[in-house]
Amino acid sequence: LKRKNIPSITINRLCIYHRCLEKIIEAEGKKESIFISSSEIAAITGINSTQIRKDLTYFGEFGKRGIGYPVINLVRELEKILGLDKKWSVIIVGAGNLGKALARYRGFQNRGFLIKGIFDKDPLKIGKKIGHISIYDIKELEKFIRDKNIDIGVLVVPAEFAQEVADKMVAGGIKAILNFAPTHLILPSEIKLQNVDLSIEFAGLTYYLSL
Amino acid sequence: LKRKNIPSITINRLCIYHRCLEKIIEAEGKKESIFISSSEIAAITGINSTQIRKDLTYFGEFGKRGIGYPVINLVRELEKILGLDKKWSVIIVGAGNLGKALARYRGFQNRGFLIKGIFDKDPLKIGKKIGHISIYDIKELEKFIRDKNIDIGVLVVPAEFAQEVADKMVAGGIKAILNFAPTHLILPSEIKLQNVDLSIEFAGLTYYLSL
Image (cartoon, rainbow over all chains, first blue to last red; front, side, top):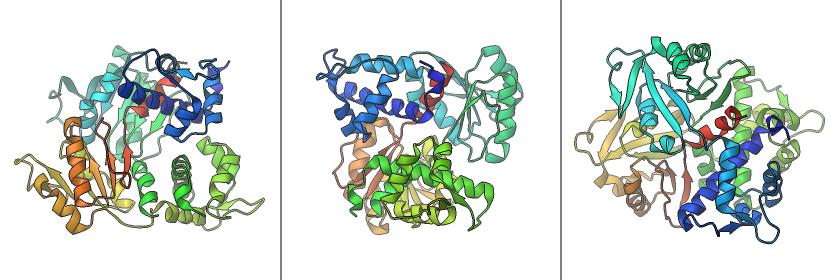
């Protein structure tokens, strides 16, 4: 099996399955005896059950015919597959409202995304703290990424500065970028990029409001 | 055709196609002569081209065999389908960092999501402004929603207050809620709910970092 060849759309669905199973555990408790069938996952996620079975067999045979998938075990396997069982070092560039909100977002720490620092160019912000996380001078960005072996950079600067900051992250040795700036970044192919567009979240709602 | 019966996963994919076509227009300009095939959309989005053709025929025959879909026209049709050709009245509850960031997010206004007010219970915040948007007392929430006929409420309060605020939105007559609080809301079935989990954006990246 070549993991690298799994299409990114399958990975997106694996994230959805993982989230769905986590919610079941939140509701039912962490009992080893809970099983779920592909048609139950289908009913919750809206993804076709044949597709679900196909996606999960990429990684081996988790389920038992007629019983379904053991929920706790499947969550653990998906966490391993998705790299969510590890700790990741993260920095945020941009100490505006969104950068501050992300630094305080409890969901990140809980899932192993450890925010090591925030960077900004504003002298009034440099040296201050957001919660327990320090704000550093953006001039130190490259060295910080290299010295602390940072995995993921979160980009929350205005669009006109995004490429310049991304280039500095790459020069420091960042491995992946989560980009909130509404701009198209040009990066070396080995750097993983995820663009976040918050207005997409609205689009799903307005369809139903238009019916 | 019964629009109500279209599965939500198809709607999600329509949002993805819409965003993909918008990016093509950004890159190529707004020329009526641009066409795109389902296999080109597939290459960009990672969604299977058979699936794409199937999704788009829900709404009629946009494309021409051997030529593809006219991009400008397809975007317009998708906007009509998704309700993105209309203006929507939005309020934000919670004037913390994330609430402020969302109020300033240019992407919303550009897409017809008009933010009419921000609500908070902090007397130090009430009466202030974020950009040109006023912060109101949360006590006025229900009446404001009713009087101004607000469509969508954005919930960015701490998890422990989320259900209480959501209930007030519903009492005021809100039609849909975009929930950033990491909690499970219980709502009447006619209210559309979209939960946003920002840590999901990371999950796609860590898969590739784990390879």
